[in-house]
Amino acid sequence: MRLIYFVFIFLGVAFQAAAYTGCLVPGASERLQNYCLQNALSEGVVDYQQLQLVDTRLRLQGYKNGLGVLGAKDVRKPKTYAVVQPYVGYEENINGGNPAKPIIFQFGVFDDPSLYRKSGLIYGLGIGFGGRYLYGEGKYVNYSLGNEFGYSPKHALSTTKSVGSLCSYNHIQGWWYVDACTNASRTLKYLSGETHQNFSLTAARIVSGANGSSREIKLGYNQYFSEIYVQRQLKFGIDSMFASGNFLGIDATFGEAIPGHLITRYALAGRATAHFGGKPITITVSYKQSDGGNLLGVVRDEQNTSLLLSYPLWGTVSASIGYTQTQSNVDYFDDAYPSFGLQLAGFQF
Image 1 (cartoon, rainbow, N blue to C red):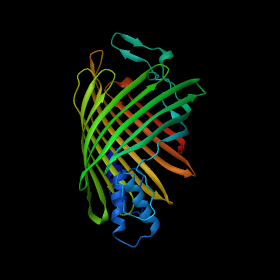
Image 2: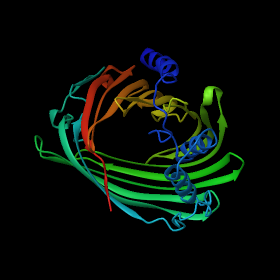
Image 3: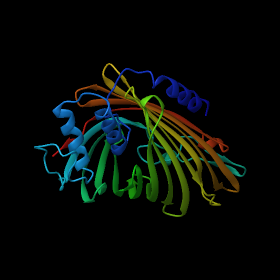
Image 4: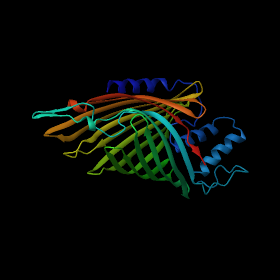
């Protein structure tokens, strides 16, 4: 938890001082970027290309006249797109197995090496499609569906992950918005699988902050569906884009208690982007407190902390490196491991 505090304090001070002045910052929502771009248009001299950029982005959100720029393209029917994305990375649990150590009970020891998890490099390919449907001024639906296929030559094991999402974004009035989203994910490994779904309803407002910053404030309700329980969650978030062109987002989640199941009671996550050498470096930190699980009469209590950095190396190749730690009142579930990977930008067609 101390790591989270340190990173948040560092980001809150340092990211306002960077020299980059763009509005298209990774991590910020599309509408927060547009808010920044429109403010930039009103504060200085702009050229025709800048006007076209803002005009097109507004049309893509359902504002059919955009800025009224002459010669602008009609984008009332955005195209559906397909994506192919290769990647390689280190996977801590390729087969979905147990921690690679015996579990000790009062009545004895359980140890089955055939159920141990296996770690190593995994090579994968993601494929999918997505698109947008416009149905009003500032009202549109985004949809996507995809699959990731991974393979470990070392262990001759494969993994499959399927994901899908459908989100409705709605401009209400002024800078007020209401969004409704549903998504589902299914991961299959040799020894285990996991399926979950979410449905969320979120109210958001964009406001101007001090020193030229812009903020998106969000409050929402989320219903989480696992294979064996349903949990209600309250979510709150603040995304900030600074005049320097950097981004900082903080999100908090509070979940109801469900006796007999290990569930998230509260979580805190931070995302930040700064620019070094003309490239964005992204830092993501998170902390999660879980409890309620039961192992032979012992109620489990766990804290999970993670840190991830990503940076574009050259061309379409980006790298990531991270670290995850789990502390549990049951020693068997204590864990700590690194992660790293290389990923190509998705090829769209």
